[in-house]
Structure formats: C-alpha cells, structure tokens
Length: 212
Ligand SMILES: Nc1ncnc2c1ncn2[C@@H]1O[C@H](COP(=O)(O)OP(=O)(O)O)[C@@H](O)[C@H]1O
Ligand SMILES: [Mg+2]
Image (cartoon, rainbow, N blue to C red):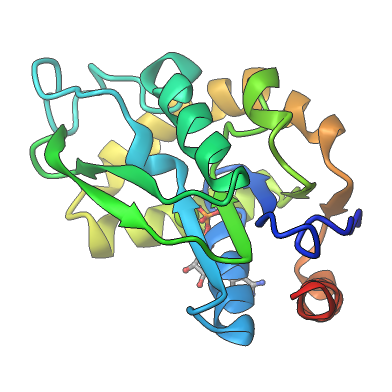
C-alpha cells in the first residue's frame, strides 16, 4: 500500500481497483465506500466508459468484445481522472447496458477526498495507470470468477447460462489472460485469496481515513 500525502495537499486520492471479472472489485470498492461514507468517497466504474456499441450488439451472440481494451474510451477516462486529480468536478459518461449506447446525459461527480476506480482493464493503459495514487489487484482464481459471473449475469442481466459460458470461453478468458492478468504486475497490493479480504479492507479503510 502506498499512501502519500496527496489529500493533505488538497488533492483527491485516487485508488485503482483492478482484477478480472468476478474477482471482487465492486464488492471491495463498495465496502470501502460504506466504511468511509459517500460524502468523502466516490466510485468511478470502467463500465461507464464503454464506447457506444448499439450498432453492433446482438444480445447473446458475442458480436461485441466487451473485454477488449478497444471497447473502452480510455481517453475520456484520462480526461475525467485528470479533472478529479485537480480537485475539479468531472462529468462522467453514462452507459446504458440495455441499448448499449452512451447517454446524452452525464453524471456530475463532485470533488471528494477519496475516489475509487473500479475496472478490469484500468491498469493496462499507461496513461490511466499513471493517474492512480495506489493500485490494488484482486487476483481471484478463474473458477471462482466464472462461478460468480455466471450467477450475476443470469440473475441480474437476464442472460442464459450457455451464453455466459460461451462468452467466458471466447472473450472473457482470452482477454483476461492477454490484458488483465499481465497488468497485475503494476499493483502495489495483490489480493490472492478471499481469506485476505477482511484484513485488506481494514488496512485500506484505516489508511484512507487517516488521510482524510
Ligand atoms: N470477498 C468476498 N467475499 C464474499 N463474496 C464476495 C467477495 N468478493 C466478491 N464476492 C461476491 O462475488 C460476486 C462478484 O463480485 P464483484 O465484486 O461484483 O466482482 P467484480 O466487480 O470484480 O466483477 C458478488 O456477488 C460478490 O457478492
Ligand atoms: Mg464489478
């Protein structure tokens, strides 16, 4: 963990939370936010930065590779994070998973001392990586990630089990192995098993509270 004095210099502290799909990023980020309070801690999701795919999307057929870095607007993420780092309000894009398009509206993010950025590929582009004060990676085994993803997509996103399995094999796994896994080396903290979770959460919550 690398806790600098950036908040004391009146700059938001930006923590990158990466790891494969189903690795526990959102679970961790939500827990940190709950512990610190929403008035001091916000979460920015990589998922908001998808490039508009409405022309190509075919529901379960896999025409769009959502796990490839090219499907994300990292230039816009850099723009938003640079504003946040300068203690300015940022206009976050809104991506609609039903129409697979970017909304005409944006979400104004007020200045807060702690910003968590949650995403599978956020450690991949060097220009995004450079904006984090600290980087944590959830290195969860593939079998557990797949199981969690299956449950989530069937329950919450109305997908079929077969569609989820196919997408995992054809896109999630290969893109994970090619882009997500290699970006692990940039992390300051790597969480390898669920048993470490409470300890890591307590350490981060304390360190971030001490900074605010
Ligand atoms: N440390 C943990 N202990 C128990 N359940 C967890 C843990 N981390 C994640 N989960 C569960 O696994 C599922 C996937 O986690 P999530 O945080 O949504 O993954 P990601 O955001 O990395 O895709 C969620 O349903 C969550 O409740
Ligand atoms: Mg998530």
